[in-house]
Amino acid sequence: MHDKMFELMDEQRRTNGFRTLGEMAVLAETNTVFDPFSTLIARDAEIGEGNTFFPGVVVRCDGGTCSIGSGSTFHPSTLLLAADGGRIVVGDGCSLGPGGVQIKANQPGSLLSVGDHARLLNGAEVVGSSVIGDGAQVIGAISAQSVRLAGGDDFTGPDPDRRGAVLKGSGLARGIRLAVGDVVNGLGDFAAAPVERQLAYHPRSR
Image (cartoon, rainbow, N blue to C red; front, side, top):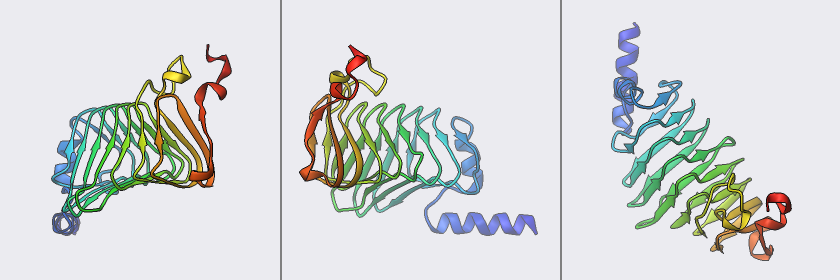
């Protein structure tokens, strides 16, 4: 009974382009996979080493490509979707989640890159051709569409003005361009929110 059930599960995974349970076991030799039954990762996704995949993570390549570096953490319910010729590139040491983060390059020719040590959490969604630079952050239930957040130090960096750009709050952020050390704290339409310097939020950092 159990053998037939596993065979059925593997067939369903293969049909939908996901790694089988055996292939997940191979992935777990160089990465941490807490629950291979609830974790679905595309067979043709490129995965580095030392990543941590919590239960409920889904990485789909539906006519697109996805490349994940090393040492990143993918919290429960994180979704990566590369479709219709879209490309997703995730660097090293990133933190996706907690909070159901979604990254979608599902438009023809779209490239969505997440730099090293970037952080997305609390329901953040990034879609379209977007660049989340090294150390940049998207914090909150934000739909970030075709944005460019300049890279810099991560959120632990001693000088806020040298940290990657930050979007925080909730709402729609479309076409936003932020420089190193910039932060936008928005609610609703981010186009109406002012661009500030992160030093204003962390005055004791210097």
